[in-house]
Length: 440
Ligand code: NAP
Image (tube, rainbow, N blue to C red; front, side, top):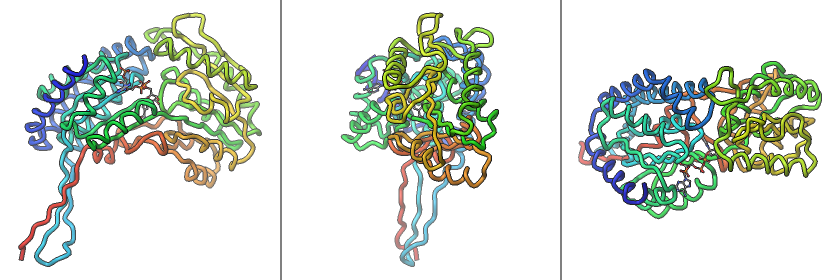
């Protein structure tokens, strides 16, 4: 699909808006709730589809479906809580009100790493507010989007409310950007493409919510519970073969426990089973495509050329295709490319640090600010470090905490605005101030 189909989809969303936005919140809520039911009813098939088109282990894929459905359920409930305000009036014969109204047609551009999850996070709040949507999923994972849209139709969400276009990304993206009928762009993907979309949205002054790349530090202090830190660091690094925006990108380990932790981490990483995502006991599937493997290879080679050392892995897996060995690289410096770029693969660069101040300085020395993790049993330190980290999401002694009710988004060049949670609704609403005169 290209320009013509995108324009058709925008017209279809624009026409559907007048009806959908005028339904009561309770009517929209009922249909979203039915969509939730259907997603859960089909979680096994949807999970298989995600694994087949994206490659992640089936268990992770089913977790993604349940989480996506959880967002739909959450926003079905929030649809009924879009409250306005009555403000104190500056004059005795005036009254001031604040109305919240849907922004209109939303263009949603999503990545391949969570083919269903990223769609649900955007479409559910948009529909709850009364907006209609044109989705452009990644060309690498279009099938989950189509399946979700079919289930939305079955749940009574009328044709035109949810539209899917796929194909030539710049062509579709430009058609969405140029259209004055599209009032908002929500995007999850790389920082480079996000910046292009932000610039393009300026021409028609659209609202923009970019959710962009990360460079997550995972900090382990000498006083941490090492077993808990080990479990969480494995999960945050190797989930989805390292291809998530909140995956650990740099492991910062304090010198007092460095050797002990790296030994334990190495044996755990060596035992991760790499195999296709539908197999039993799979811990890690393939990477998304050849370009992703080549990026990982070049970052690892560059780090080695700068003095880093391979502790585990460090090369393509003997299964071939796009499988890469779970890898640990030590003696990494924060100036190296591998610590500055988003790796998006199963490679853990390890950086040794001495003091708390040094850990904070290294952690914040990046343009990104999405997720960060810290492990310590010292409560004062946990607050100090948490407050000093320039990140939108901080896990303190915890590595996995995404929830529909928790705001998700980053500081600095990791994006603007928040998804999920009550704050996520505001991204799809306009505020109208109404002044009533001659009141008394
Ligand atoms: P990407 O290359 O930026 O692609 C994201 C989406 O944008 C895809 O649908 C892509 O289409 C589309 N696209 C590419 N060029 C475009 C253009 N010129 N105009 C309009 N659309 C365009 O990112 P990705 O490689 O798919 O995803 C990985 C990135 O997403 C990582 O940086 C990761 O950190 C980030 N991410 C962020 C979050 C978050 O919440 N902050 C969550 C998940 C992922 P095609 O794929 O069809 O080319």
